Amino acid sequence: MSFSIGALNSKGFSSSISSGELPPSDHLTYEGVFNELCFPVGPRATKECELHIGFCRSQYVSSLVDAGVRDYLALFLKGSSDGQPRDSRVLNSVIVLDISGSMSGQLTRKAQEGAPSRLALAKEAISMFYGKLRDSDCFGLVVFDTSAKILVPCTRKGQLDAEHVFSTINQIHTQGGTNLRCGFEAGTEALRTYFKSLAKDEQQYENRLVMLTDVNDNMGVAEEFIRKVSEETIHTTIVGISEDFRSETCQRLSEIRGFNYFCATENEDLKKHLFENFDYTFFPAGYDISIEVESDNVQRLEVFGTPDKARVAAYNGNFADKERKSHVITRLKSSFPSELELREEQVLTHGGLILVKLLPREERPSFMAVVSMTYVDVTGEKGKEEYKVAYELPEKEQFFTEESLYQAMQAYHFVNELKHIIDSSKGASKEQKTRYLECLEQFKSIAPKQKLDELTTFIAILQS
Image (cartoon, rainbow, N blue to C red; front, side, top):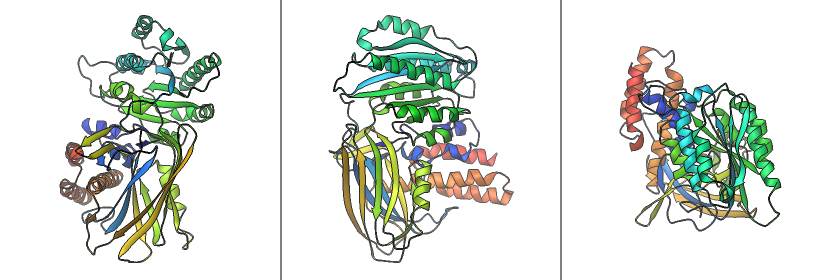
């Protein structure tokens, strides 16, 4: 199960590296890298929201950031909807497509002869998205540049002429500048008009505006609007079609109920998220998830793998009172189903990891805690799960309760070290850069296998 950041990954970072550029450190996030990896998390979940919990003691002695022996609690969020087809909810959707002049450019910075434009990729993905809809679902299409136009009014798919829809999509071309707000407003109004035509019934709906755009500099203007329409149960997905799409604003928007986003930086990305992962991208699995850890031996904690604001709030909010035993790990507005892979009797889930670094009040031979999670399911029912954990702590630098923790620590150190080097390398002396390169070469032996090529390229860029 993934969080409100949805299909977020580290595509922006990967694309910059492959283009031979050192990206800003905010392109690389813990949750982005976590979501690219598969973790063994035991059997399939039977409840809407569950936690699989592990513990480790780990040390990376060559770390430039933290070379000490540290204890970590790993919380893997999973649910019964992971790896399953979409449920019975009807999807009322409107696609809002950016047709500004920049959409005529290619997806990557390096021009490739014969490569499709951003708009061509988006049009293909929209047609495939339409094919995934049920006859009872609603489809609408809005295009915008500096103004907006409704090309396909929101209509139940069973009442639409598919040939007309595909012809309309094919005829779309680029023009003009970009006004995100007018696109949002037109898309939302199209959905509202459709709602008025619906009979009052007990049917459950997922109402979703899906915006495809290559613009990110003024995404902030849409924040108030997206927050407001979420109160009308209209959720938003933003698809950034650009290697330069920055995630900071979208991470802030992740605090809005039902919101998710992802970046498309390769030609297959749009197809993957709008078609292949359709059942996971557009249907939230739970809301208002709160996770707490209660222990009498935790002085301080740091949380990695949730939106930054939640992590900072957890870090700053729990340490003034030395008698306090309960620590809020995170509060998540939404979660979405994840893909699953099966390996013998083990279930492997994509992402869903929250990593908690623990600083004990005193040395003890064991760690004991109660981890509790509350949530609201898609029907509005509240749920609560509670887990008692206890681990004996051997006197050694490395201790892992299970295989998934090795991968978790590899991913954590990958992000930790590279973010530090990106931020510190500007203006660094020759001696400092040599130190960075030595550390990165040593890091190859423990880096996630899926990230070795990126690490090698990263080193080459730093050397140049």
